[in-house]
Image (cartoon, rainbow, N blue to C red; front, side):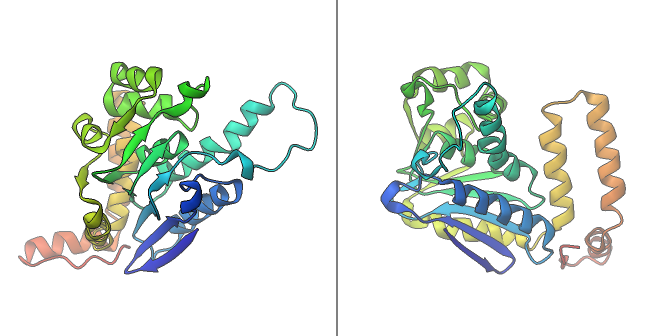
Length: 259
């Protein structure tokens, strides 16, 4: 896996092109750690998750999973899912900085859910998304049955999950799973542009907005309104909020610091 911090943007790049960037146990833990570091580091103001080669992520690489120390017993599978795939998706959803997925190729299984968990999804026009679980007789993991209905509705989610057909990037964009589809050669430039804009923005306001939007899908109106009021209270203590108001009054462009 590759990692670089450039202009306030944390670039996390899956780099196992020979395996279509299937995620191993140690890579999963590294991604989780980097997202946690991004939340805590004021120098990081946006995150881009991308990959090398023809695939974005072909799912979990079970060959890279540590061998169990004993025979499996009831409860082991559920625990493995909670501590593995679900932790990975939660790390993206809970990251305090905006996360962009730049999907360069096939995103299958947990790889698709990794992209869908991101705040913004950019895709090469040759990319595909595959709910591959049903092809293997498996139930979707990594929050797929949580994410997809919220993004495209229950009927579309069931269609994708029941059949496991490859979904081209253009169709994914029409369904609302992808924000923008571009030729593969333009993907990195667009990711840099969007991440750069986010890195120049009011970081805490964006983080609080992310929390509000994500929570709104699960709560009622009273809960959402209370959360909004609390977020406003917190945000108005930031330097960027002061700068935003001052720049409006002074009729100039704001210069946000991310604080």
